[in-house]
Length: 202
Image (cartoon, rainbow, N blue to C red; front, side, top):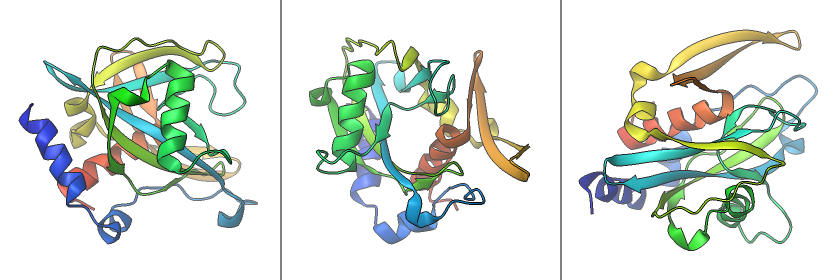
């Protein structure tokens, strides 16, 4: 059992709701949307336990999807009525999208709700994933699955800040390019939230 794994368990065991709220990273809601109309969703932030160190399992969405086509994302999706909790949503979606066995996931805890400008309120569920992984991708939703070193994603030096004009508004976002993959938007924002939570920075 690595010292990093023990440290992660301790961080989440010692966390409080108030501390999580103070470390929130989110996006301004686009004009015409309100917090009352946000679609509830959850994602799994899968930290894969490798001998060489922890990695983060990410997916690239297929190009034809209505929401966030082609983007890098965590396994996850909308909360359904049958889901008992956001944790249940995240584990169900991870199973459906990439074939991740929920019995291999050790849930550590959740990060602050991440609200996207496009109308989603997402609960990131952080979990340790114990190999071997026998992934089976949902070809309709997932074009590819890959792993990125957690150390790289948690390093503030790799957290780029950009802006663009979207529907008449100037919007800022995080990006973490890695070996040809462009990790940005909500996914990068939730990784920044994880980094702030683990380091106590705001």
